[in-house]
Length: 144
Image 1 (cartoon, rainbow, N blue to C red):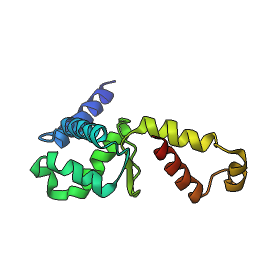
Image 2: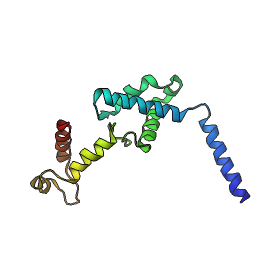
Image 3: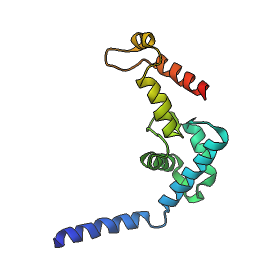
Image 4: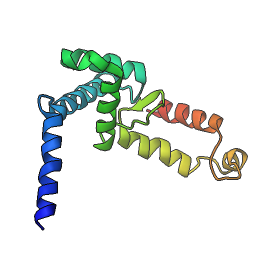
């Protein structure tokens, strides 16, 4: 049991050293709140990666901008894991409203609006083609 205690102390000691001077939680919380305010004022539920960087850059502490791309990916990953946004690495868009995306977009894909359209667009592996996804996104966003 003593070795487990020493190992856990060592791991937590390393984590504490790594996070010393970096307020990761505070930064992610502030960015999440900033994105929430942006969503309320602009009603943009899906934004590009470059727009995400543009929105977040002014609120980041200057010392984090040394490796901006890595910092932004870390923030986006943390917000994704918290359920605040939907972010997938190497995808050019970020979903600012995960509830809307899951309810409206995924719901529309799962429960096709028109049975004939479903049969036309389904592929052998059970997924829809890109054009159907684009049409669904257009249709759902027009309904709003």
